[in-house]
Amino acid sequence: MSNTKITWDKNPPPAIEEYTKYKYGGPTGPKGNPNPPIKLHLGCFQKKIHGWVNVDVRDDVNPDVVDDCATLSKFENNSASVIYCSHLAEHFKRKDHIAVFKRWLEVLKPGGILRLAVPDMEAVTKCYLYEGDIRPFQHMIFGSQRHDFDYHYIGFDEKFLRESLLEAGFKSAERYDWRGTEHFFVDDFSQAYWPSFDCTSRRKEGVIKGKLISLNMEAVK
Image: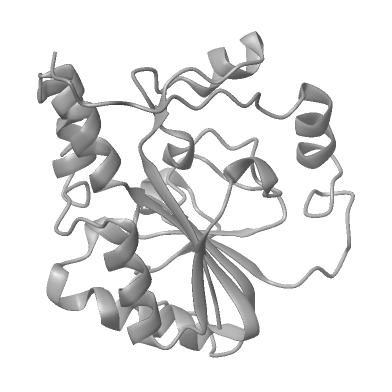
């Protein structure tokens, strides 16, 4: 174990009542606005968000729409108020990531929000140096490699991600707290804490244990 210092995150997760409200009848739930603005959840895998259009390139995970998340060929320009994707952007090749961000910018309405999460390479590096063992971080760096789409081609820290989003044409890009989103109940990698990645146990115990190793950032069109 090295002398690297780790700042632990200790804020409690949302109460279960909030989870129930949002999942079963909140603003984006089935009992909410019958005509809500289009909100896209890209790379949804098997973690769907009620009331959103869940998009994935794999038809075997039963998304609402099967589409290439890099091109979004089935969606018109200026059609979405929010685009959310958790640990998807790192799956695009380094030479293509600006083009992908530009395409997402086109699909968003003026003033729309791109909310994305990617592995935080700065945090991952600090945790690796503290732990002294690379094995627990392999999937955050290289992908889980369970299928052809599950490989990482690019890594981000806060500076690089913000600069990339601004280069693509977004007006601003700042970190966000997953606890303040309407989809906080979705147990995805935007809530990845080292050494435990289990959101269920955090919610049950009412406390977050560990260091957030996901870089969560919102960009505004």
